[in-house]
Length: 75
Image (cartoon, rainbow, N blue to C red; front, side):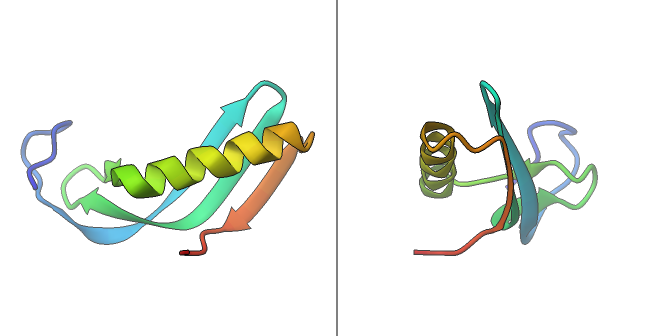
């Protein structure tokens, strides 16, 4: 896939660190599968993974978590 940010690079499989904030909650998830631009480093997470990350952030916010750093776990 061609990068939509720099318009020059091609993306390749890799990993990203995603930071999500909601209210007083900050959730950092490392090792998230993503497509990464070889030129500018922009990271793209697919829709199913993004939905899973948002669900985890919602659960953390409901639990009253302020800051949490996690490793991505599939399934």
